[in-house]
Image (cartoon, rainbow, N blue to C red):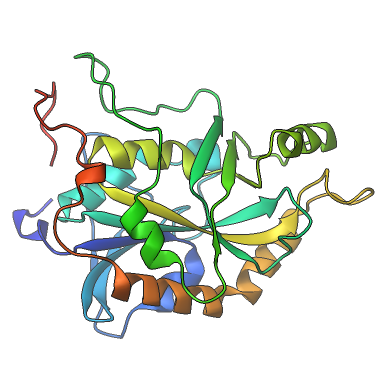
Length: 265
């Protein structure tokens, strides 16, 4: 990495390929490497609503990464290398409640991890334990609550890449969980370990398998629904970037008074 890359952006957006038109024509692309390998793709830097923003395509330029193979640690580390302190994470989700139909935007406030085998920490030694009772930054969540976005919800993150069975979906719903997703963990906890403010912006693309009898989730329908709603979603994210706070966020500064076993970028 070129040292000049540091301090190039204050806010990041991690999203899908539809966000490539998020910037004006003068956007800059930067290639980074990290102690955890390369991120999913080169990062695009540009200005949005007067703020310096970094965009990282979560699944790669050509959607080459599945949820369980994403270089999560490299992605979040690379953003901090660029000086990012706040991350908005637009994502596709299935709904576990019938009132949240396709096209609904939800700003979750809780997360349940049902993944397996994903590396979910930078701290393999040193006895570092981060506070995670409320996994998302309250300041960023407030900025993301634009237009008709729904405030609050529990997002359960599954391993993937398969969709849930009907029994799993019904079980999730019985727990009171409202959304199901494949990429929100370990993204959120890695952001917290790096003291990055982080908030998902969840776009419902389908009703999960247990909601409608006889229906199942098909990838082609999920992608089509996401593309159908990409422009309103981008508009919402732009407004969230505009309204994101500046300065210190005490909620997400979790290492105060602690000596870390590694140096953060």
